[in-house]
Length: 91
Image (cartoon, rainbow, N blue to C red; front, side):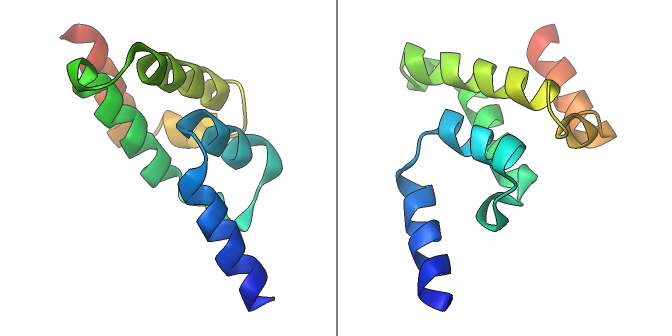
C-alpha cells in the first residue's frame, strides 16, 4: 500500500497542471486533496504570465473552468481564493 502511494506522488509530479486539476475534481484521488497547492500553481501562472508559455496560461484558465464546474467550486469561492481571482481580473 505504501509503495502505491509513493508511485502516485511521483506520477503527480510529472502530470500537467490541467491533468492534476482533472484528477482533483473528478477522480477524488487522495494524492490531490490539496486544493490550495493546485490553486497556487494557477495563481502563479496568471500573476507571472510573461514567464510561462501560452499553453501553460491556457491550461491555468481551463483548470479554473474545471474547478468552477465541479465540486471544487466550494473551495474556489472561499473569501481568500475569490479575492485573489478578483485581483487577477482587476489588474
